Image: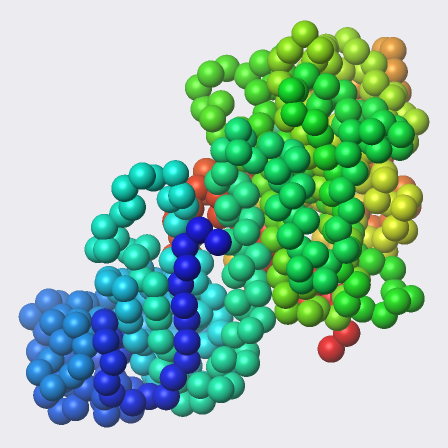
Length: 498
Ligand code: BES
Ligand code: MN
Ligand code: ZN
């Protein structure tokens, strides 16, 4: 974990070090516990300061004051929650993230007691999740660490609630999810000279500590199995590829698993069809799908989810070299279908083709979801705040979309129609690996679909959301770890015994 933040839960009593956070609505009234902790003078000070600073208590606004006399704290931070209407639909992780971003110094206490909020342990746990994710920073390669005043510097947060034990119990699950997101973020942010395929596989193997069965397929094994498409991509790299299978068996032994498949291109230069130099450094994030799968398996295992899930990631590096695959090559995929390579930069679909085929043949999953930073075209279509969803099954698509709404990791359904499939017909082989200039995300999805047999399947093109992420209340990292919260939620709501 890059940054450690410790979050604890305590009773609503005065005393302690660091910043003290209290909440108000747009009427500026404090909750009962905050009034008790601040005392009459403290409450008066908040009212006067709000007036002079024109602080209106609007949702996600804050006012920072020197701590009032008699209140043990370095500063008092007043966070606004807005109107009754705002308070009826609080985004708890966002509020936790916002709050963590407003405190400075190493320690802080948060009095979560606004009437109507903070009542439930579940909401408190969601608040803690947001705070934890906001505190994440990736600075392991910075020689001089950031100064204490930086917002990422908060390392200990105590959340003061009416029932600390209940909050703590509820937070066990959200902490598992937050850790999964942090693992994904670390993997995405790491440079490819450090995180080459073998190292990626080693890190994924750490899941064994949580009871996940991990199998690493090395080069010899991949050749033996016949993953000709994945191996074609890998052959130009000095680094050997790996495929990692991670199995969490928390459900009934008789229950078929949910399969999660991730694209793990640790660096995508484009290969012989080399990319232009501008922005090529971003292609260290071309393994965001694989990172999300590893992070999700961590979350599920750590919270002991009663579900059977198999995660599979194809990890390769796409490089130009004398040994590289080239445009016009025809490769034979694991499925037996042949592929004419038109552009070596359309490599992700070759990796997914073989891993998807292997997973459905070996584990007979009840459904498959793949995640891949697959196309620039999806960024053109949808931007950086919503992922593209392609699926052969309306119900699966709807369930994923619902999990997206609940977590804020939103998806938008895209079409799979015969025209896209036609666009990848090849003169020489069963298909070609690009479909021309138009509909790039959809022709990529049509390609992948040819490696999926008759089972519910969804493909998430996360090129826009998976790297170079937009900052939010719960994320300031280049790699947001997009997909971990979505997949955890999808499994919890649809495939977990209660
Ligand atoms: N990894 C890229 C897609 C990508 C682009 C991800 C930008 C994140 C940001 C993928 O391997 C790729 O190069 N796709 C090509 C496909 C084309 C050659 C058919 C693309 O989108 O241009
Ligand atoms: Mn590429
Ligand atoms: Zn790529």
